[in-house]
Image 1: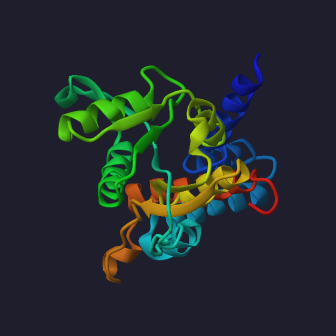
Image 2: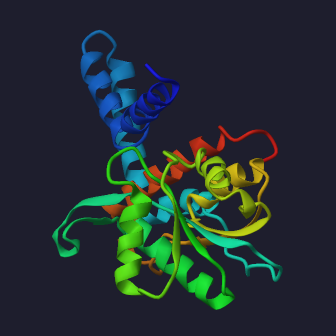
Length: 249
């Protein structure tokens, strides 16, 4: 098996079983299996399952975790840039409104923001990311942007399979891109993304978007929410991904 295939398999297993809700399923199944022989341990695991599920799915308790991982918004420094680089965030494989396949919500909003920045600063817009399935995510998003704004020139990097590969694939396709870029991605994803781009030699101005939205404190803040659980899961995945960055990035 090729190195990337092994890495992708390990990443998939980690995301599925060591992050919510897979982790809670593992804990609950373990408590059931240990129920007769180790009742105290089984009760502890069952309690941990319920406690962690409630904590991560409740806006009031999940907010500190999510906001700790999100990149803070700050004005983009005034200096010359070579391009706006927008990282893709997946395809929607059931999108009849786009013909059959369209950009995911993450890809669409990231690239709308990237297009706005490119137009304001008169810079080329590069969409970066292939993903692991066909068609490449960058191509899907380019089609979407071309329909929305036909006059906007959109360049592609449709070879990188993950965030770590993106800066190297960009340099291979666009050798003159070295220097300062404006990088667009989710606020949750930005620290890890900018770290890999800096490691590859880029000067990065972070342009995070898609911040997790929290309502003012109310009774609903203490109610479990499936969407909040999903966002907590994304925050934990990004936090664990940051651990793989080389020291200092």
